[in-house]
Length: 130
Image (cartoon, rainbow, N blue to C red; front, side, top):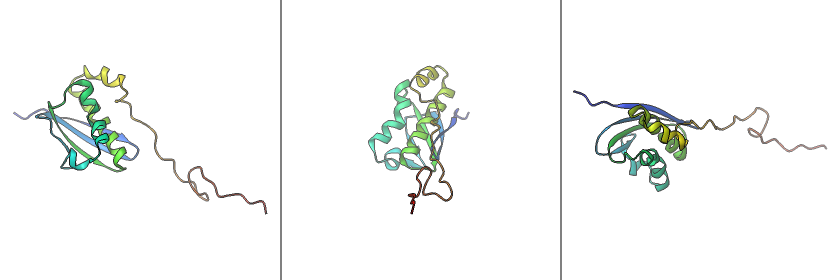
């Protein structure tokens, strides 16, 4: 009999993370690399493990992640969002704790597009009267 696997998608800025959770010793793999190799920064590892710490399931599930787009910070937050969503599928009792911490809400902020004839999204070329 195959193990039950839960999957969810997390997003942030231009990053998209597909998260797969199944029972196991607690290995976290990002794009076929161990978490420590993919994210060398401690703060990013803390961000990713935040939903697991809140619901108290660290070391009980193997997590496989495919992430692309964006930068390091956006990817870490997309992974956190995906893990939170997958945990709610795993056990609906986790939803209250994760929602209270704001981990189930997709952060809608993204970079505003540059406008034509201008320097940037809001920035303008300097006006000269003469």
